[in-house]
Length: 441
Ligand SMILES: C[S@@+](CC[C@H](N)C(=O)[O-])C[C@H]1O[C@@H](n2cnc3c(N)ncnc32)[C@H](O)[C@@H]1O
Image (cartoon, rainbow, N blue to C red):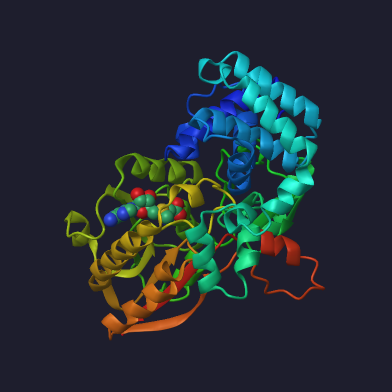
């Protein structure tokens, strides 16, 4: 958080943004109207507020006599998140938070009438914070800061790991880089980072996790395409595909990236193998970003706006040697990067997404050559979008031979022994993800 801007202004704009999320808008939309000078601080405060929103909403319903209006509730929630869970690196004195929250009300029509009530609720919380915390101890939504259905789904699907998954979802994610293998290896790039005063650790042949996030402009060679920002889990896709696609013949293999925008995995495929790649996306605005991603990296693919679940001109370029289906999903694995996700999803979304993923899988499978490979990926930890989907697909397609793949890569999954000094960084470098790999007989 940037303490350089007055806290009362940051509180007010964060509360407005939080009220927008409460109305169903994603954080990037909610932050769009925030003045540029305030935006970095407000974004950090909004993420902090979202990571504690289950607790603060429950606290507000205890502290307020009547259900407050949305902006009043949001103001209380932001201030309570700072009071009860001081943000890392920025210590605001508790009384400063209360005073600044009251000051935030003074310049805002929708809050003026509520300044007395906000003052009273925050002071009451301050007087007996331990008792307030104790009273919410057994409230699952307050403890894990996610909707009840979300917590219960994880409890049911992961009886042993659900707490660790939720703990990881509530923590801020580190910045992870993918070094462009066409330029250099991760070890060599780490030396460039260190020379630029940026500390990090190599976590794979092309992955580096940074100790602290930095603006991309500070990354050596970013504009020249030496490096991209991509979580460690997302970096599995290219390897899994290339492991099953024959690259020996004189003709370049033909690869379809069926849901490609903004092009992170398309780029990784092209950085790590020689191929003709077709990149589709149904969303024209996002599709443009594939071209921008590839241009920065000096790579090229055939990009098209298309629904990969429907027949279209794109099919004329097949059949393909390899298909990557990085399917639309609940994004339940990347909550630590987008803390609004758990709050924006509805339980019923999961079944709808499952249907979409199934339709995409079934439409794409006939487009794969015999002997070719399909990699199915989602950034979700829910089994409906992962293991259940993969098993049902294998049952529907007798010519699909399932190959070993990470399956559900859970946040916090630990594959290295305790003694390994890389353990912490490797663990932190991975969002929740699912991969299934099918070769066609
Ligand atoms: C998980 S994102 C893809 C991320 C991308 N593979 C990357 O690594 O940068 C899923 C994408 O699927 C696209 N999508 C959703 N339904 C689709 C469909 N029926 N056909 C093609 N693209 C679709 C969305 O617009 C979204 O960009």
